[in-house]
Image 1 (spheres, chains in turn green, cyan):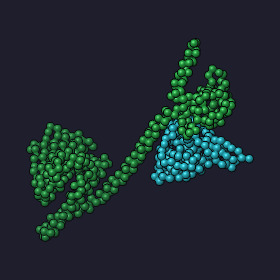
Image 2: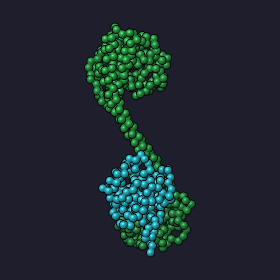
Image 3: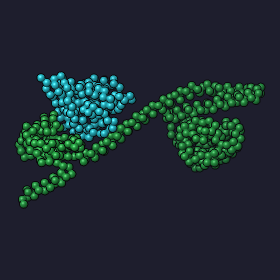
Image 4: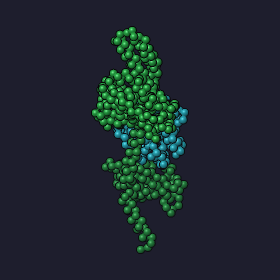
Length: 390
Length: 168
């Protein structure tokens, strides 16, 4: 057997092997773009009826080439190397969809204009895999687009909500402060002259308007936080002095609840660099929560400690305590436990969120430990040497 | 005496704008809610009755997005194109110019009709005025708002393309 024959036989074997994976057929096309000859599997592979096609124009047999006549002439005259159509969907007589690759090139070793070779390959198997991949990718993109749109809508709504809260809070602040101030002044002036009932009424007005003023302040703080406009003014602060001042403000409530307050303040607690108003606000929110959520006649313990790196302030209350899952959500905005919502204790779910934000703005950390029936401890750790995140 | 013409037309546009649904509505008169990505090309036929006789449209429904871009051979001999955007996704309108340029690079004289599809959906990101402005000032072709779901303007879109091809 000659070398040429061996090569040809090997080519044939290779073609058959390839053909089993991706069935291939061919046809010879004349310069007039008519079918001159075709392989025996040509009609079957393309799902065409078993009728003679030799002598028919290419476009009459395969509508895929309608409109491509100029491009084919370019290949015929060898001005273009080839012409290819990939992933052409066709239906077999039984309705099954197949995908075909057409490749047209000049007949090899012949002068330009002699004719064309049309190779037809069934690429259904690989195309279906590609189709699945593309389907998944496109569906994922659509979901991404939907999510991005939903996110933008939510952001718009959130901006609108912030705007409303800020506007309403600003408008309420002055009248509420006026009510609170005048109620306290009136109470001071008239206390010796009025009945106990009237005095209680005035005290109620003062306390409620003061609570309302704090709520408004919290809302305005929240607005600042959400807009990233929270600014700290640092100065030396001594927690051992700030905490008793805050407790004094809460004293009427502590007294009315008959709560026992125990102090465990470290005697040599160093000062730290912090925003005095914000630090006061952190302690106020934690202490007022402790008073609100302690049972009548319960106990609150305030502890301060210093380590070489941190100052730590812990506030324990002997309230009903919380579950693990409640603890996990405790510092989320607007979060209130189911028990808190059902109780008579007023709250908005803003206080602890603001505490966490303010503590973190001081590069500190706030944690809560609790056990149902055994009370809760909130601990704020603040760095002694502060590099503040603004 | 009446005669018959045959023209190759195609639909171009980003993925999931509704090209296949428009073809299905035009050729088969039905709509399917499921989204199935087109891969490669599917060719359909439909004859339109015209004043001079019959116009046979060979409709090439091409895969959207970047899936077809390297295959300019698909566009060989295209007489006209419906270039489609999805009125609920603004990004698909920005792509109209790109598809027009790609088509004209292969067929400089091809006529185009631009479609804002999914006109039945209320939550639109593309106002009609924006599409009108883009078509009048940058794309230089007529536009229609269509809905493959309801059939709104689908027949009109293909008829308008036929008129544009005949006038070219």
